Figure 1 (cartoon, rainbow, N blue to C red):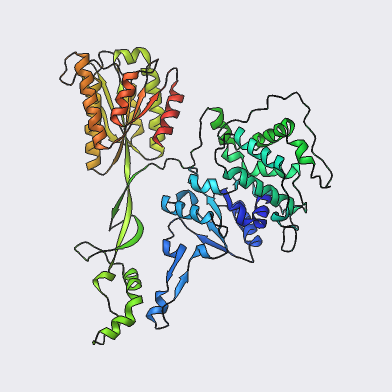
Figure 2: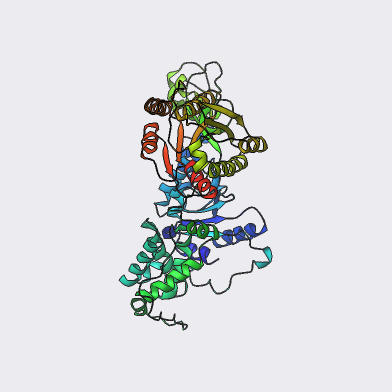
Length: 546
């Protein structure tokens, strides 16, 4: 409720908030509060499939065809209303870019409703000031807000009237840097949130409580590193003032290490659970958009997600978009009627024809090529098996297709063709033997062939090659390390030419330079994982696959 109130006070500076909540009574109560606060300007609900004409406006073709003249219809982004984006986790990249550009202007503010676990596009997350998580809140805990309203109405103190000291700005900037936040928008949003909080309580200068509240609301979900305490931690931190008097000079006194320590503790206590777990695991950055399990986008004219219509010719199989065609022809009707002697009411030219088009996502295929040779068995085959099994479970949850190739002795064997059967895949993986030579070239060639066939069948393949890099069997089955290296490099160039997404996982106890060079030739991600168990191996590979 406090975040909503601050956004209501300074919508042009705070841009909006990100709400993670599934449909239910708690979210309905939250939305009721939004409509109550924005009852004057109004709330406009948009969906992820909103088109450019609705956002930016266009010709009012209804008025044009009925003889009321050519009129322009205003777009949603031109109205000074709050945009409520439902199903924001399904927002396309094109819409994310358009909303990000609109949020850079002071007229636009957005509340993004995230109903899934994938998150939002980084461009939108970077521009929205607040993040609210309503998961786990019972309806009985929803009470009317008290003590946060009444000061931010029209005619009261405005955020632009609040003074901010240099020490306060430095403190918020240092705090953002200590949390690993690289974007400069974060401290700017925190400064505006602190000013809105001070204006909400009638203070003409920033108090330490304003800075702390702004940091708790703006920084936690953006953190990419665990907060650390300042080196000089022996000083007693100053205690926040409990009275309501203004203390302009108090900010400077608190801008030292003691105040920074209090702010770090406050932000650390406000870190979301999943962010804290991720930072504790050692990840360096936050992925705002997760893997959806879908492959590449393909355009057609039959089925899938509707796309904006395009100019074209009515050939066999093309589908006419009648409304878009009439919209394109409407501005020219008066000129065409005066130039045509016929008594035709509507004049349509070939240049006005608009055709329907749709976007359909292909299924994704994960091809695991596992090194089952003697060197891998001595080193990391057990960890590789465990990691592949964990990844197969995640792929099954995302409804991906998986395939399993094992290479040992003198050839590669397709243990499992593309399938979604998790039980069958685990059974084949459990019976995977280890030992013998390393036909790395044969394993890569079998994976590239399977990926090429999968592309022809409409899949989007991704290769995951798990090996220690000690290939010693050539493609013809002879034991020659030099020839085997040349064959592996040739197949790596073939995979790069096929433009197949690939990951090379070095399962050796020490990173192998030849395997890194092979991954570079392949255009693949090289992932060395020395001294890693199956869980860490699966975690790192999942991050690369996303």
